[in-house]
Amino acid sequence: MEPLLIVILTAAVASAACWILSLVTRDTSWVDRAWSIVPVVYVWIFAGAALAGGGDAGRLVLMAVLVTMWGARLTFNFARKGGYTGMEDYRWAILRGRMKPWQFQLFNLLFIIGYQMTLLVLITLPAEIALQHPAPLNAWDLVFAAVFLALLLGETVADQQQWEFHRRKKQTGGALAPGFATEGLFRYSRHPNFFFEQSQWWALYAIGATAAVASGEGLLGGALNWSIIGPFLLSILFIGSTVFTESITAGKYPAYAEYRRTTSMLVPWPPRTRRVAESAV
Image (cartoon, rainbow, N blue to C red; front, side, top):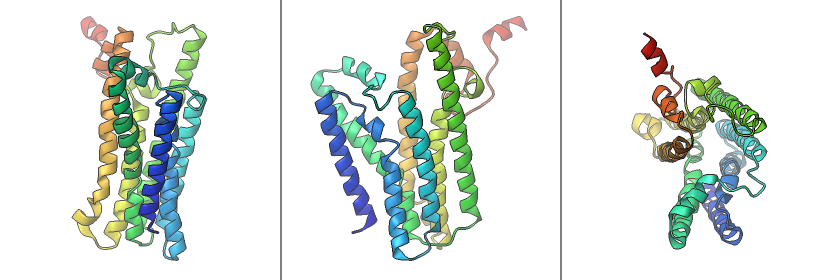
């Protein structure tokens, strides 16, 4: 059986399981619990096909190892926040309150389950590109792998800084000003962990594109191949999710308006001058 078909069938089973569990438990965070796991499985399916084929599987094994590291880090961070103990994403509860029951269930089926689980297949398809274009590892693979690891480190640091902030906030009874993280990487981006997360999948896409270029596909068929739809749609999802999350945060914390004015939303960037400093000049 073709590895892509195996991935699609696996995704269909996982999607059905998430949907049934969401109905039985009335908890719509099952996709969140699968998010860091199923992409690892998918990429190893492609890598396993390359190894079984007896050809040069170095690039696919590299991709699978990188995605496994991504998955292990994200699973750990999700677990320590209580993600596997039945805690539902607070944003779904807010949306449920804004919709009629049938509307939310349709949203659950089509977006939370259907769109997001399809997206988790799409972001792993650079591995399919690498499988279809077997070629030895080259210097560009190592460059993009190093970029991936740097982004992974950045996300690890950002998540740890956010974890430490919320730990201190909990110790003060929720009264730690300004109510949200603004130090460390959060001084340069309101959501540095979101930026690093989606950027890793662009780095993985670049490794798949390297395989296509190395096999002689050229610019349009290689560097700009059809698997770009995965990281592109992931970036769109993150931007939309970030806008929604910020609308909630801004309603809770008055200081967030100034933070949003001075600090980049995603891409880490030197902060703008605060209004207090401007008035003093």
